[in-house]
Every structure is written in C-alpha cells, then in structure tokens.
Amino acid sequence: MKTDLIHIIGAVLFGLALIHTFAAKSFEILSHRHPRHAGLFHLLGEVEVVFGLWAFVLVVAMALLSGSAAAIDYAESRHYAEPLFVFTVMVVAASRPVLESVRKLIAVIAGVLPVRTNLAQVWLGLALVPLVGSLITEPAAMTLAALILAPQIFRQGIPEWLKYGALGVLFVNVSIGGTLTSYAAPPVLMVATTWQWSTAFMAATFGWKACLAVLVNATAVVFLLRAHIPDSLPGASDTSDQDAPIPLLVTLIHFAFLVAVVLLAHHPVLFLGIFLFFIGYTHAYAVHQNPLIIKEGLLVGFFLAGLVVLGGMQQWWLQPIVSSLRPIALFFGALGLTAITDNAALTYLGSLIVGMTDQAKYMLVAGAVAGGGLTVIANAPNPAGVALLRRGFNDESISAAGLLFGALPPTMVAALFFFL
Image 1 (cartoon, rainbow, N blue to C red):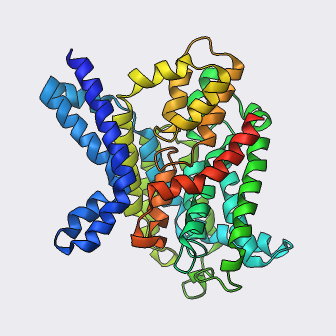
Image 2 (cartoon, rainbow, N blue to C red):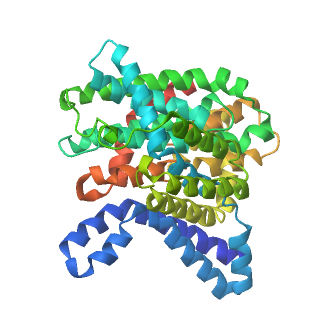
C-alpha cells in the first residue's frame, strides 16, 4: 500500500514540476514586481532548479512514508551518468580554444557560401553544428551552437517571437541531428544495444531524413531572420584579437580532452577524472582561457539529476501506455509524451517491451527524437541551451509556452520526414 502511495505521490510531484516549469517565467516577472522577495522568486524562476527542487520533495516524502533508509536507497539506485556527462561535456566544449576553433571553421565555410557571410554563419550554427552532434554528442553540439548563436540572434533587437522560433529550431535540430550515429543521441543510446542498432543502421534509417529536416528548418528560420541580422553582427567577432593568441598545441590538447570525455561517456569515474585534469590544465595555462561555465553546467546537471529521480517513479503509468499503442499511434504518442517526459526515458521504457516489431521500434524512436525540442525536459541537452541563452530573452527567462509554440513548426517538419 505504501508503495502504491509513493508512486502516486511521485506522479503528482512530477506533474507539479511540469506546471512549475511552465510557470518559471512568471516567477521572474514577480521578482521584478516584489523586490523585497526578489531572491526567492528568482530562485523559483530558475528553470534549471525546478526538477531538482521537486526531486528533493519526493525524497523527503519517501523518508516520511518509508523511512530514511528507503529514501536513500532509492536516490542511490538512480543512474546519474547522463547528468554528470552533460555537465562535464558542457564545460569542456565551451572552453575558449574549442569554441574559437569552431567559430573560425564556421567563418571559413560561411565565406565560400553564396549568401551574406553573417547569414551563412547563423545558418551553419543552426544546421551544421547540430549535425556535428552525431560525432561529439548532442550536449556538446548544443553548448557550441548556443554560444555561437547567442551574440548573433539571441540578443536585444531581435523580435521575441523570432528568438523563440530560432530556439525551437535549434532544439529540434539538435534532437534529430544526433541520429546519424548510435551513441550521440540519448534516446537512441537507450535502445541501440538492446535492439542492435549500429551507426550504419542509424545513418541509413534515420540519418538522411534528419539531415533533410535540419536543412529545411535552418533555412526557413534564417529566411525569417534575414532582415534582423545586420552586416556587422554584435559580438560576432571573437575576443581573440585582444586576448593572447592560442597556440595550436593548446587547442589540440583541448580537443583531446573533449574526445576523451565523449569516448568515456558511460564511465563517470573515468570522465570525471579526466575532467579534473582538464580543470588543472586550464588553470596552468589561464592566459589562453576564458572563465569556464561551471555554474551553468552545475545547474544543468542538477536539473537532469532531478529529472532522473522524479522520472524513475513514472514507469508504472508510462509503460502501459507505450506498450498498448500500435506503430502509427506509437509515433504520435511518443511525439506527444516526449513533451512531458525525457525522450531517453521514453525509449528506455520501449526497450523493456518484449516482442516489439521493427516498425514499432522505428516509430517509437522517430517520435521521441522528433518531439525533442518541444519543452526544456524533452531532450537532455535542452537545459544546457536554456542556461546559455536565457539572458537574451525578456526578463532573462525563457517561457515554456514560447518554446512550445516556437518548436511546433520545426517539429512538424521533422515528424513529416521521419513519418514518410
């Protein structure tokens, strides 16, 4: 009886966390209206804090109902490799040598494209970088794309509705852009081993469709943005002209750290050990660095860890829904459910179902990745994008409703390519 009650409480708290996510921007507005309590409202308005806060409430409720030992056992039984990895890869990918190298590469490619260079840079940030996520993982791609695009389109002077449209395209493109390989997208990773989906299979079945959808989405939003992107983009030039130039060896060492973290993504003890060496290295050669985004990374890790704790209590109602749907209904069901649950959790539940047809497997994963941009919790890299881009929006907060409506058109494009 206690177990049933805990599951119900877990579902209720999960629902409250979702409501809190959609209300986060309202708390930011209240912080301006009531300066006396601005600190509290600002805390409640931090999207990255939401799921960690409600996960703490869940653990306390479990301790009161079943005892502290049961609550601790549950918290320790969760797998936190993904939150730890996202935190680590965010910090490493955002380091100055890596970011500056990617910016220079984009500038070179943009210079040979038959459009204005600034438009080409924005287009490449929304198209090429998400596709590169298939190699360096989606969280790393999200971090790089967000930092490259922030001074270009996520800033004052761009209409708010266009910023939400671009944010939706970025989130959707990152979600589907990681499907060219079997290890880069969290929802694919959850099923690849169980269903024996190789990188060759992913590229042939999902990858080419994802590429087409990414190109269409990026082209459409850049066309809408064209009048708002001047010839000289604010902040588009890197600070490298004023800072000490970065030696090639330093850049190569940073990329070696990034590659090592990506290769060891499933081994937290190892990639965290490498991360500690990385921290030491950046301090030793601080002249070639910008401040690391430790705070932003920790907030994102906290958000994802909270989602892991709360999400672990939702299997009792999610799995019957997933297992009862036929392939076509499963596609649209996954597309919708992804908006209120992490898409990796959704595909993981699907991997537990015995006897799924190949068509059903495809529809589940296709729907899950297509819907990965609809909300901040739909795909693991999304909180990273929110943390890095929210300052460019009104009240320095991203509205969940604004993101949902901004992501609907690119989601429909992705769904069309995957469904057909």
